Every structure is written in C-alpha cells, then in structure tokens.
Length: 187
Image (cartoon, rainbow, N blue to C red; front, side, top):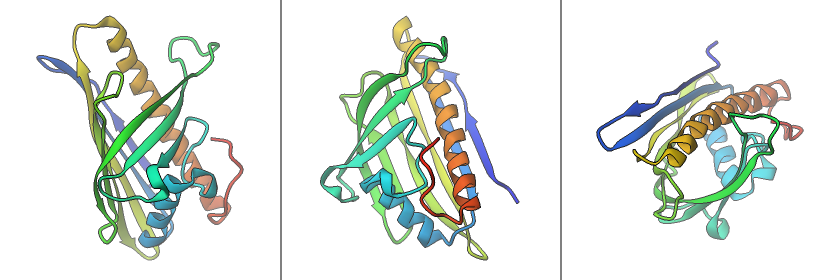
C-alpha cells in the first residue's frame, strides 16, 4: 500500500523564489473520519493524533473553522545549518479563504503580516474506498529576491517543510499502529 509522497522544490523566477510543495498520504480511515480529525486538530491540536506538535501548534480564532476565519500557527523551527542551536519559535497567521465541509476541502493564505513569505495551501481529504482515504496537502509559498537574510529563511523553510511532513507521516503510521487512538506526543 502507498504510504505517503512528499515533494518540495525551490524555483527562481524573475522577481521571486517560489517553493511549491505537495504531501499526500494514504490513511486507513474513512474520509469523513479523517476530515473530522483535521477539524479537531485546528480547534485543539492536543485532542487528535494527526499533527506533529513537536514542530508547530495550530489554533483557529473563535474555535470555529470557517471561511473568513483565521488560523494562528506557533512554530518551533529547527536550525538547518546548526542542529545544536535551539529551535526558532515564531507565530504566523493565515486567513481561511475557502472551507468546504461537504467536499472536505480547506484553503488558507498568509496574511500581509507574515515576516517573509506569501502564499498558502489547500488541505483535502478524498475517499479512496474500502474505508481508506487520501490526504492531499499542497500549495506554494514565495518571497522576493535580493535580501540574503530572507533567502536564508526561505532555504530554512524548505528544511522545515520536509521535517514537518515527514513527522506528519510518522504521526499517521503511529496512529495506524495504535488503531487511531490519541498517541503519545512525540513527533
């Protein structure tokens, strides 16, 4: 059975550097149940197995996931250049620009206050049959060219995405082994 696919790339364009990404995973849960875990994660990440809390913690404003709402992400970003240094802790906000509960689709974008990136992503759950579903999380971020500090942050961002999605895949594997009970909070 296919477990997961991760793709992150860096592309230089005329005026920006972009980072398209895609994470797909097969989850042995019915789609509606996986979607319920996603919503629960956004409302209270401590009550679900899906999110790798070692690297970030999401929260929605007003405890309701809806179009026009906002997600605050608190990150612990590992230093890709020196693993002995402590993680960088930072928070960013994202606007929920589309929320389709019936279609199990969620889209978000960075706010103008983001320190260096613009862009966002889409999270979708797709029924795959036989009690299995596919999680598809994809999007693109970008930043301007010419500022060495921002370009280093962009390179660190790629490292973070790979680390985060690998940990997400591990959360799914652990949850599957534990029959989707709330796991120990390791990843």
